[in-house]
Length: 143
Image 1 (cartoon, rainbow, N blue to C red):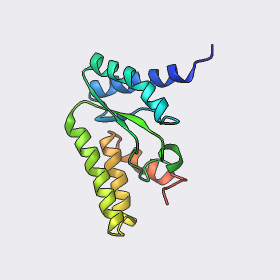
Image 2: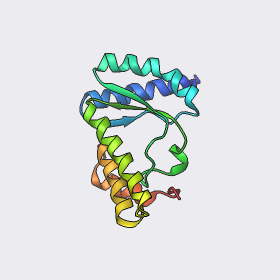
Image 3: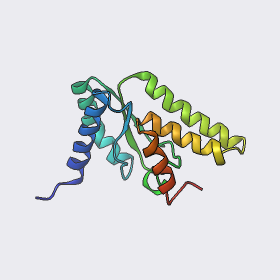
């Protein structure tokens, strides 16, 4: 049996929503979408999941890009953020602002850049070991 892309994306989002509800993940990301139209087609299902699991979601047009993941996987690709509490969304927005401030100051390099990736990984509830492994294995960092 072949699974269509929409069903696959919905199933993956359902699994992530359940991990957020269970407190396993503070923040979860849907799979990156091809474009805003594809992401927007998923929003009704995401909102249904939020009602079902008692969590929250937000569409995201410009995901925070850090050295945690290869840039090609997420840059310019909209998705949906899943989280249980508004302070998680606020923490995510604070990370985006922190990156912008570092870039504006010409300081988005070295230790501050790596720490931002670590902070994003912690928000996604990854262990320190996984965060370091993801950063070290990233073969496509943002320029």
